[in-house]
Structure formats: structure tokens, C-alpha cells
Amino acid sequence: MISVAMMGGEEFIFILQGTDIIGATNFAVRIRKNVTKLPWHDDQSTFKLTMNIGITEREREGRDNEDVEHLLHTLMEESDATLYHSKVNGKDRVSIFSDLNKDT
Image 1: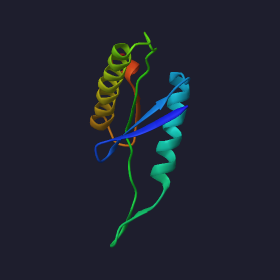
Image 2: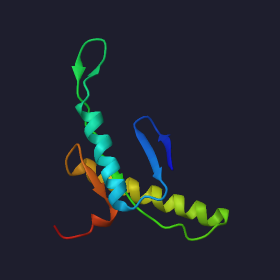
Image 3: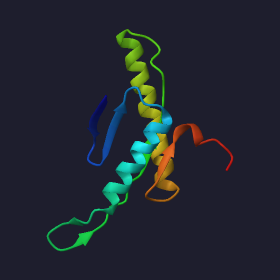
Image 4: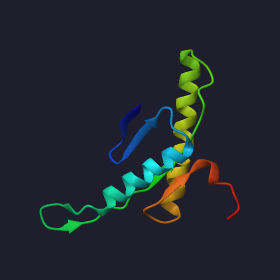
């Protein structure tokens, strides 16, 4: 199941239940490629968009509301950090939270 929410004017959250990090990455890459290849228009010009995507993954630890709230808070913090990493390390990227601290 895919759930989508808009956070602010330019940020969206996709929750991909039952999807592992590889599936989520493939999904993100497809979205980025499809959005960035389209021509976008305003009243005076045509332009292309770039898209940065941050991905994180967590298992649900419990069933009560406090556990779900903690999980969502953690996911938001991690995905926001990953999105910021994408923005400062080049445009038009997909970044994964678990890769942020690896030596490359």
C-alpha cells in the first residue's frame, strides 16, 4: 500500500508499506526520472525540474499510538536529514539514510 502526504509547498512523503529499501529506492528513482524528463510550463517559459529524494526504512516496533507516533517522528527526522544530504551534495539525487555515514 502506498500513502502520500504533502509537507509544505515542495515536500511530499510516500509511505510504502511492505516495501524494502531496494523497492523503495527503485520506486524513488522511477519517480525522479519521470518527473525530471517532463517539460514544465509557466506563462512565459518551459523548464525542467530537478528532484531530490531522501529514503529511510524502519520496522514498526509496537501497536499502540505512542509507538506509531515515535516511528513516524523517527522516519520524518531521518528522511529530512537524507533529503538535506541530497540537496547539499548535488541536485537531482536519490539518497538513502543508511548510506549517509558510510565512507565513500
